[in-house]
Length: 414
Image (cartoon, rainbow, N blue to C red):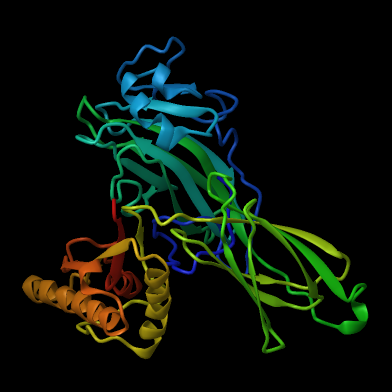
């Protein structure tokens, strides 16, 4: 699973965790600083309170590395084709009843005042008692991390952004907090922690260009590095009004020759989030390879829309929010098999009953706007939670503002 450039639906907060990959637009991924991030070297490079299992015996509070989870526990065989196919070594965890025990810990050096991206691949074993994790950085727990909308037999990549502030070291810890003997079992893989570095834009001075045009080779795949067919590519010049439309061929690849100037690129495929990027001109290259990874619209995936937050005690939709909802309408029109659960939330200030009613009003207003713009009512369900499910706590005005939100859960027809 590689990192992509940008998903159009983003909640960009320092402690917000949901499904997304890589740094936001305008930033480049730094190198992954995690040692043995894919466990290809076995049980080395990290600290653990769990017992290192070398005999495949399944016992509480133990870990084991294998590329075949079904050989360790029969229940994993049910998930092999969906969650683990194509992956290499995985860390298999038999959860402990002691929730204070550390499953995985690693300390990495960081640059002060820098944004970092942290993610893991996580899949839990039993539907009846799914494992839940507690993730912390420098002993500060990330709110609502990886127990978010459980999916049986489906591995998920979860992420958060973290700002280093004044510190120069990040102490990353993973604990299992499900203490029941049966079911607190899971796998981990592909742990990533890297900086998001601002792209340096090259000034478009004509006399410095060494070529008038660039040939781009595009490779479009999903997060499992499987090429995607029938991708619609739209390329628009930042200086001209014309648009270039192209469709990726059956191999998931296409080539195009463009003038040596900036362009806006969007990639769209059935059952995937749209991806947007900027193609910058080059002083030196005449041929550039671009690899993009689209994120699937899987059932159960939770996402929010940037800027879809509310003033206190308000349920009205601003013009900015309506513009953001336009992207959601476009996604629903392009994917008719997808429905949405719309969840409304408030902060915890004031009367709890009124907060519940306010969260319902926010859901209703979003649903009404979507139906007014052509989305069928039967594709939209909603519920209000009031202030009972905070995203990142209620300590500051910024945190309370972030909790006044609407979340969307994808539901796909079977």
